[in-house]
Length: 125
Length: 110
Image (cartoon, rainbow over all chains, first blue to last red; front, side, top):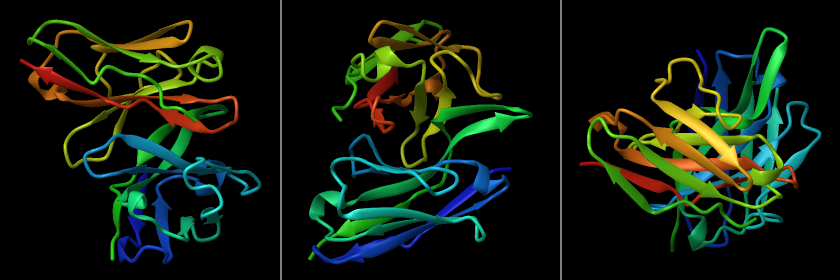
């Protein structure tokens, strides 16, 4: 079955950097777009970034554009999020999520089909 | 990238039906049939309940259904059960190829 395991969270000072990882298993990782979604404490879900299956297209929320970089290594079945110039309002649980699913020859994209358990990032001095 | 609009809370008694609305614009909800809904219990990761406006993933109860009219999508839960008490979020594909969530709705089963 699909498994997504995030890691790399922790406490970091404002202005510093952090890299999150998401290890994927149980599906053909290189076939799927992958997302990062975050949730600040007590708040709702916020979409952060998407990387296409082949790595050629990346999209970002305005709130992180220019500071965060999404990447993937299809040979390692791993998704990354490099977070720079971190601010207090970046404090959140960060989830990775698989975009859609395929069944036989049919694919159904553009939704968050499977989610990891999340990793907590706390930005504080 | 404005968030989609959901009611902050809804409630219903066991066995009743409730509907949660999700309002966007023609650049997201109204422009594409890529609206999805997620259930989240406290301390847990979200779970996909509805995708492509009205399709249910395997394993999701048929008590959950989705629809859309214009710029507003809706999630209906029939035959409310205590285990349905959770936060619910809608999401949509956008014209910029990004994604957007609603603010979330807290469902209370009375």
